[in-house]
Length: 164
Image 1: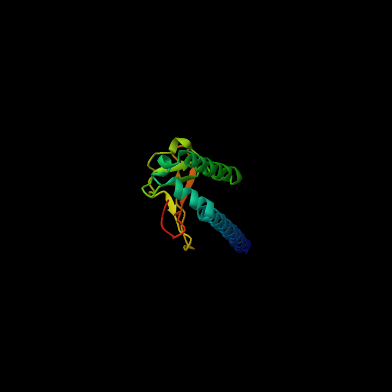
Image 2: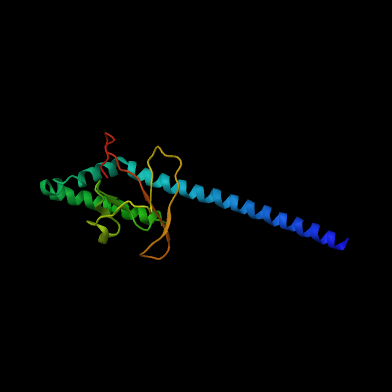
């Protein structure tokens, strides 16, 4: 009789623990999904700002620096300041870069990346504004050794043509 009571109590405790763990996992899952959606919205917002679009289009014009170096430098400084402020406000962003359509980093908060090829490989979570469902790709950063996620979204000009 005592053994049966022990088994019943043990099974009841086991079930209670599993129920609590399931609840905790469910809550954490929702929190993580909310965090990803917030990051996605932030990236999409930045890429869709008219000022970012116009400045990016100007800077990615190969003739802009030759035709008007002062305006080019002013635009470069303006977008660089915006990206720097973005990483200050959004402290979870380690680095923000704008790439050309050929994958060359044109502007970055990490100046040593500028001018270098940055492939959007298997570690990049790429999404567009019309995608609601995406699965982030976690990887270990070779620079920091910490778990990281790289988000990428297209920058489109006023005619919805891909510019960066």
